[in-house]
Image (cartoon, rainbow, N blue to C red):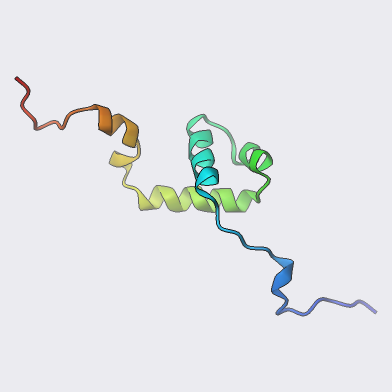
Length: 82
């Protein structure tokens, strides 16, 4: 006879929010063309967590402002410099 854990047992899945450090690591690693699998091995977190975070992030930020660092260094296009 097999004994299964109760279905309402939440201790089987530990949920932790990503830290700011982990979020930054994922963004930087993807910019460096690292795979999701490489990132999950480095951070020791599930691949699905990394994929879901990155996909949610790309949908939340418009593509024009994806590179914030570049935008800070360039003056606005409609500005007049003398």
